[in-house]
Amino acid sequence: MAPQTSALRAQPAVFDESLRPASLRAAGTGIERRFDVGFVARLALKEKQIQQNVRPVIAVHKWFARRPGTLFRGLLLSEFGDGPLEETFFEPHDLAGLRVADPFMGGGTPLFEANRLGCDVEGWDVNPMAYWVVRQELTHLDVPEYLARARGIEAALEGELGGLYRTQCCHCGGEAPVKYFLWVKVQECRSCRRDFDLFPGYLLAADQRHPRNVVVCAACGELTETEDRDRPGDCRGCGGDLVLGGPARRGRCPCPHCGEPGSYPQPEAGPPRHRLFALEYHCWECKGEHRGRFFKRPDAADLERYGRAERLLGQASAVDRFVPDDAIPPGDESDRLHRWGYTRYREMFNARQLLGLSRLAQEIAGVEEERVRHALATNLSDLLRYQNMLCRYDTRSLKSLDIFSVHGFPVGLIQCESNLLGIQHPRTRANVGSGGWSNVVEKFARAKEYCEEPFEIRYTGRGKRIVPMPGEWIGDSRNGGVEATRPVALHCASSVSNGALSSTSSTNLPLTALP
Figure 1 (tube, rainbow, N blue to C red):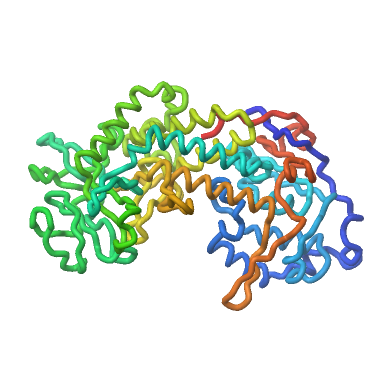
Figure 2 (tube, rainbow, N blue to C red; figure 1 turned 30 degrees about the vertical axis):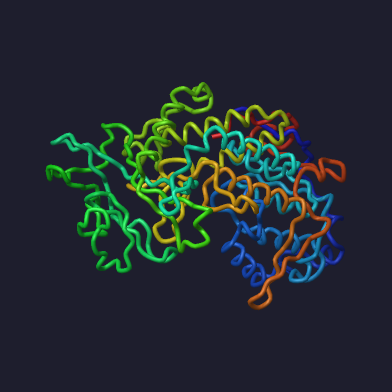
């Protein structure tokens, strides 16, 4: 891969010792004398519990194993600050003139912490996604313009595809948005050739965030609410006995029609097939008087909506351009996909997801302003982790678990499809549920607003206080370069490549390189 470097200017990786405070030049290394392990450890522990609240910038895009930003702020201020760390940590600083380099930048935490303190920064990574994520963290963005375009795209898709994410409320009969579509894997019996469900269990929702337990009837598929999981009672549809344990476990599931023992997965049959068996929706009309969540068994109209998505996908001219047909390569984790019959990435999405994602990509490609277009493309990339048929549904917290909620590719038997567009309060725009376009846009906007006005959180006993840091900011420029600029050089290349340390080439990572 040819080295790719951001268009922001590079500087030699040097440090002028005269920039270190005189007290530290006389006494030795600042880190050895001023780094307060206990103080930083307490802050880091708090941050890791709610990292996006403490360092909103990381919400630009998912990255694995992010290190606490408070740790790197503590290291930098211990080395280059002047005074006890417990005091200087909550004061704004300007370390202009220092240069910090990271040869394996990953998600970029050391770089955006150093950049925030005024340092020149330079980073390398051979992973194009790491390069892209850090670049979006350190690129100034006009947030109002970005939000206007993001919401414009949302409105366009709402008018075109919004009906695919609606259902009829079981209580008032009105139309309501669906939060989550729940699917169970289906397999054909080798003996009688009839399809059957691979249910590992029939508990849809536990009585923790919903007043009662919701159980799927193994016989008729109706949803019944019950007080006691040990004695769930009778199905409200067919009157049969409700059970919580499902027939599919440890790769075995007998056919309920003929009793033939069956096994799963069956990769020779191709990628798994799924059947829609339940919906969680949100009715604004009934919410004030209704306790808990809204669940229903899909009706004929719900099944027809998905059928319409399949037909629209077949007619969509954008699909061939924006839906990748790449083969899934072998690997320690991707081999799990192969064992389930997945051979191409597009097979990990259902028709409604492919249709919506391809239309999003088409709309984003038409945005002229480059920084806004790149920000929206980053949103689309981050959205993919919620918009695929490997997401699971948490029966206790009642939410979608994205594909990266655990490392690897967990292939469950029950999959959760989130509303692509998201659900927002009509007046406050507060999001309901997770995994939609509006959720990702809100997090990204909050991340870039934090870049303009970063803060720290000071804990006092059981309380906490937001501490603004006037004069600190994250990015290559402030207010689009009107107020200030900072040297930032990012390289999609090895830090030991020939000429990497002195590279000043200027090549942008193309949109098509996004995964």
